[in-house]
Length: 247
Image (cartoon, helix red, strand yellow):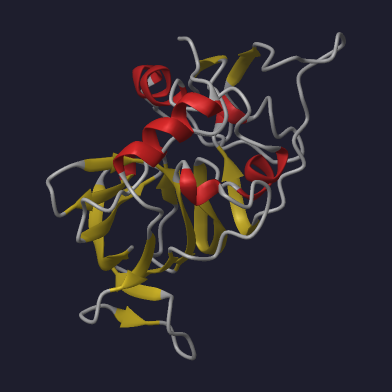
């Protein structure tokens, strides 16, 4: 799908809204020692969310999208699956702001039926690849006990891929990857992105999700996350954290 130009996106955003930031709603629980990090714990999974932590290239990212830093501390006694479809910002207007995939899913995956056998993956090149292979992205997001999703392994070869089945929706990628302007995402955005994958029990990850922009038409948004068992695909909880939209 054709990607948008950054100029066009900026014009649309400027015409419809002022720059906004997300601040924890008074009803939200705050992480100890903070005023801008909301937290919730469900079924042994602790989630910390902040809507004002982005300070990298581009500095004006909040003019175009809504970057949200998320920390996930998994002590649920099961592996936790992370996919962009499971994250949302539900607006007070009724609009659901989707998490945009920063890297295109450009692989064909033959899922393994056993944890002992890694999936067979045929990789396609991504964005101006070198002649001898795919782009290597040195992810810098904080992680411990993390497996990258197999369909993103071509971009992050230094990470061990999740060895079991990892379903994802290619249509979700086709729909929302097209939202990126031609100049985005930057290298910093790719490095700091929260990746799709699985967090082991006692594992932890911190990274950024890039949501469709929250505009001044919203009074509040709710950060929503489904908790999915990476081994059997069953939902075992739901996280909901309220934020106020500051103009």
